[in-house]
Length: 381
Length: 224
Image 1 (cartoon, helix red, strand yellow):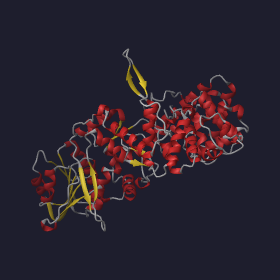
Image 2 (cartoon, rainbow over the protein chains, first blue to last red; image 1 turned 30 degrees about the vertical axis):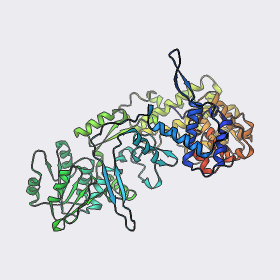
Image 3 (spheres, each protein chain N blue to C red; image 1 turned 45 degrees about the vertical axis):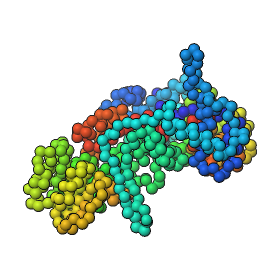
Image 4 (cartoon, chains in turn green, cyan; image 1 turned 180 degrees about the vertical axis):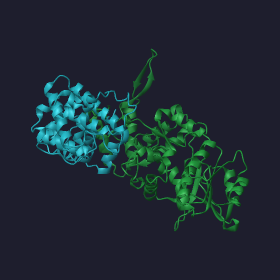
């Protein structure tokens, strides 16, 4: 087992010089704390760390660009200017170039939340970063407890996660955390939409567009609230089969059959509730048309809600199922323990090295919710 | 305790190769195998020094008889072996310094079953007369070698009443700095605590000291 690396105090090098840097910081109390480490990084990189330099005989050696750098005579303004210029050069990438890459094809997300008593709306968005400068800017903006960078806001692909107290949810110790991981996002969204946002009533009819983890969670929740007709709609037969096993009373493959006609054949009219989780613009349009009078449709893709529909129909835009995670996730766990919310059937675990297989299985529909596990050797107590 | 009895599962012919042949075993059994492997590794590292091996086996017996710390951690799934192996590594290092023990391990009264407080109370019982800052516990995680030996010696000497300033440190500490070094958070390494104390001792705010420790001067314990 590898324990923490040897913390050698011998590595505290150049203590006299670094003490002059500390004195400088103390002499400038007006300097913001966020400037401290960028200055230290700049000094370390230029005075000590060095960069590759080609020698005459063709070999490469390391040479510090500014070995005689000292703090003598420096003003705060000058050191900040130097440090910022150096960091700016870094953010431009090697030789001043920036890098870009192709879009993944995954749709972005933007939602403006109106707040009572506030002039400005709160904006929620997910945007794909497509060039190196924006990636670095995001890393700098993500500041948590003095540590910068928690990818995707949740330390994705890391062995340790940064979390604020209000992000934490207490769960039973008896259940494995890796199984509960998907509850925090898709499953909460799907179930919360049915239970909280739409408040589906017993005996009602509901159609769920898309049977990924969000849609299947909505199907299971619809069964919990005792909806009479639960229609799962997808283009993947495997997922539709699973939806029927989890509680859907009917399934429609809308690649093979006419959606509106099929729904009418099942219910005799439209449906009372629709959960739209495909982020497909055409399906969003369909959702409003297939509702019964007084019915509600929930769009989970971040598309804007629309009012003023005839027959008191409503189209809502829902985020995270309008759930308070600290209350709703324990509720879902209790339902799972009672066997009424068997979300473990959606989850399949993959070793982190099998990430490509997890993606392929997910696209094929053989896995609904892949969970990547990083081996326990990487976890320190 | 006989040498082989320290590893309970070897009696059932389990493999000590933790990554192999886990097929058909429960997570708890897999964890137990890894804990045994940790004990075997520790015994191998202690080598042929009979006194150290005997001290290690005594420590294992004491900890096993009065705590659950060497059993797989409940609720941790397949990672239940991590905390016990972490404890075993520290016990091995304590055993390697058995000639400095001032009390027998058998008279240790453990604190509640929580790894770090329990280890701290064991180390205090064996080695110390005076309290030592909590961050010094991390020196018992260091691998065997000159640096580990040196820092563990500091821990022992601090427990006998020595001052940080008596050690051959790379930083020159004033009395005020030493005062703050002793107040460094428990999760710091020694070098982080020294940097923290240096900054605070020079007159820096708590927030500034923490920021510096969180950056290059604290991380990886280097500044060049």
